[in-house]
Image (cartoon, rainbow, N blue to C red; front, side):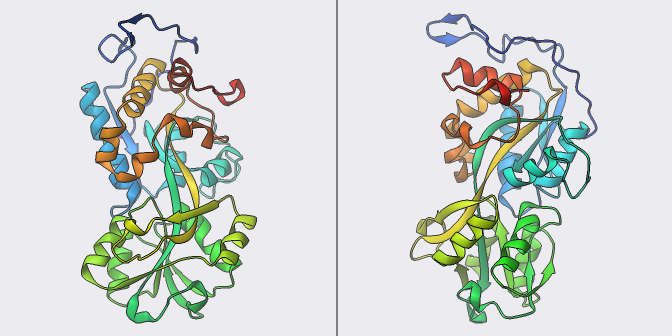
Length: 334
């Protein structure tokens, strides 16, 4: 499987397919679609192992590959910011990203390529909200953001990830003085357990595999934002209020106040329209299978399509939404 596949532009011009129906079923299925321009394989850019992106993206890739009968899989990357660059360049077909890095990339403000407008990136479907949450060992005595001592070593995930891009700035806004560390979530979990770092600042879909693993091995504190800290963060960054449900982790006794940012799956705009239509259809019409991949996919539903007002939708994805009664403004279709 090559990660350096270039994809031909779709020759399908129409966005509003009438979709001949038989017995209430649209006949544009994977079996009847014209596959002449489809790629022979595809790669999904995820993030580091131990994070939700890796589990979600790899599982989604395997499901699509199985359903379509072509080769596909997830690839470890630096996360949302790098995925945008890899999809834009055509090095990978699909990726996962969050709205903040996407907005930066489309404005030519990506830290990976300042000044480059990444306009070959198209949206597919909503994934889930990424909560920003903080974890420390219970014996550290850190039970709130204000408890984090000056000069604390904080792990922010892979360099260039959503967490690494936004969480340091959030904590600086909240008056925390820290030393910045980067690494994969699993690696940082091990460092926290070994006392090599003091805190991990996560931005990932819940439950975060690395946190769930830590709970099994040791006692941890999952630290919530105060109401004032939450509002201060919302005022300063492209995030919204969020509450981590108590049943997400064994450690939590009550819902934990946090902030969050929406995630969307993205695709190269050069991918054939019929191919992207089928990928979108299989994803959004099989939420039970998506939830088997990761429980955060409970929000991978078409009703959340309006959570993206940043990335233009791929014509193939837009066609599925319109056929199924979900309106997308024409200005937001590539």
